[in-house]
Length: 404
Image 1 (tube, rainbow, N blue to C red):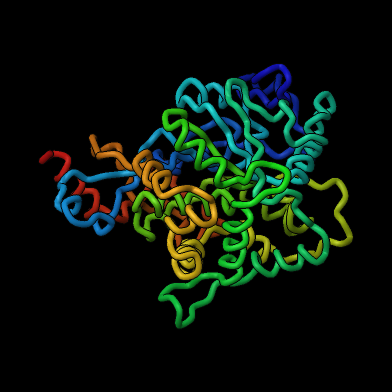
Image 2 (image 1 turned 180 degrees about the vertical axis):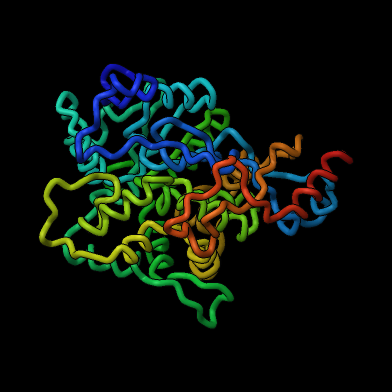
């Protein structure tokens, strides 16, 4: 890390030399060995880090002459990454991002209060600039350009807005006549709000249009985007990009749902902090809980930290398709891209499958399901292997690649 960056816990030091973190410092992230790689990437100090590439393009996406093309297509790997907040990134993790992945840019979707609150909780007295200035170079990893592009300019954690968000994110999943699967109407409302706010801004560059044009203008410069947990603001953009590329909704929902196991031990940490301190406390330990913040049960806090597959599928079908008119119309009318820019963006995202190993197969993880999330009390597998759920698709791709 650069000299101006916050000091991080050096996990390469012998245990007897590493000073214990302060009580309010978020614990160091240890990469869960049972996560599938790809899509997950082990970046030291950063939870939920994964490559968005490798997903097959649905055959139904193509028409006419393209439909007869036997070459399978997929989302380009090594270009777009997503993660949780990287403020505990270690030198080792920084090196992996720059040297191994070639990442040039990092986009931060958090609000200014979120950045300041987490920076203050890290108690880095030598780097107080980060607690007052969300644009601070203190927050920039070495060799990577940081772009502060908040989805919400100044996140309001006052009683009125807090009550609204709590109602959204603690809403239980249910089934109705609209869709054949369970989803939370509250999450759908929240994701509609994110998709709307991410396209407009008064003080900072609008979050989604800025990163979309970055991809279009610099298609060979890998980037990563994140919020706090890398789930909601990050997940909505990821779903939009995968939908534009032509990935089917079930696969998009699986990719979205990976956040719960991807957080590893941080999931329990987030749940504990939210249940004690309320919304806005996931990434930072509050030294003094506000009397305005309502207490909530662990079950409610777990819903806030959840990423159930049905929620993003419902957003795609109810909001993106039903209200916004589809992903292309959203990108043009909400994000301000031209039709040509949309076509260029899709062309950047989609590439032919050259090797079967490049394809990310939808698979299970012990102790977790996309529809039900992480089952508390289950550790998951420790052999590094997932449970295959889509072997037929894998064999079909393998046959086409071998034939080609």
